[in-house]
Structures are given as C-alpha cells and as structure tokens.
Image 1 (cartoon, rainbow, N blue to C red):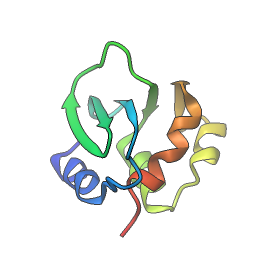
Image 2 (image 1 turned 120 degrees about the horizontal axis):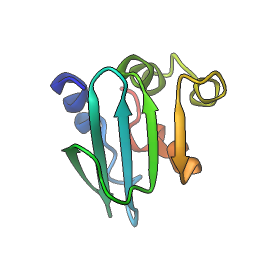
Image 3 (image 1 turned 90 degrees about the horizontal axis):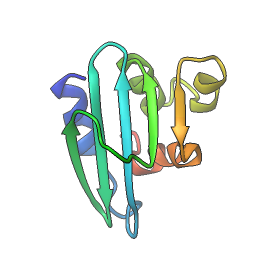
Length: 103
C-alpha cells in the first residue's frame, strides 16, 4: 500500500465514529503486502505487517480498497464477486465507510 493511500486513510479517519471501539482491521493486499489498522477508542494506529489476532481480515487489491472507500465500488458487491475476501468479524468491515468517510 502506498504511503499516499495510508495518508489519505489517516486524514479521513473519523475519531467520533471510533469512540468505544477496540478493533484491529487486517489488510492483505495482493499487490502491496500486509498492513493493519488498530482502532482504540477514537484513535488510529497503522502498522505494516500482520497482527496476531485481528478482529477482521480483508484480502483485496489497493484499487479495490480505493474504490470501496470512494464509493465507486459497493463493498458487498466486491465481497460477492470475490474482489474482497473477509474472515473474522465480517460485519465489522461494513463500518469502514463510517470510520473513513469520503471527502
């Protein structure tokens, strides 16, 4: 995942939507390695690598993530068509758009 994509996510983070949360979103990018987002009560920490116990794991390309975050790609459609694979607390993935609202 490019630093540009990481910076955009950080800039769009909505701490209000993350109040009371204690979750780890693991991303496995088929074109950019693995990263995880650790969200704890309104704070966001982005780490490279793999978390040993993520709340939800998502496998996708960086382009698919960009499309979902911009609203160009429906997350459920991406999941149903195999562009997005999720394990763990899959319903948690639906909160990504409220945690990182588009501009």
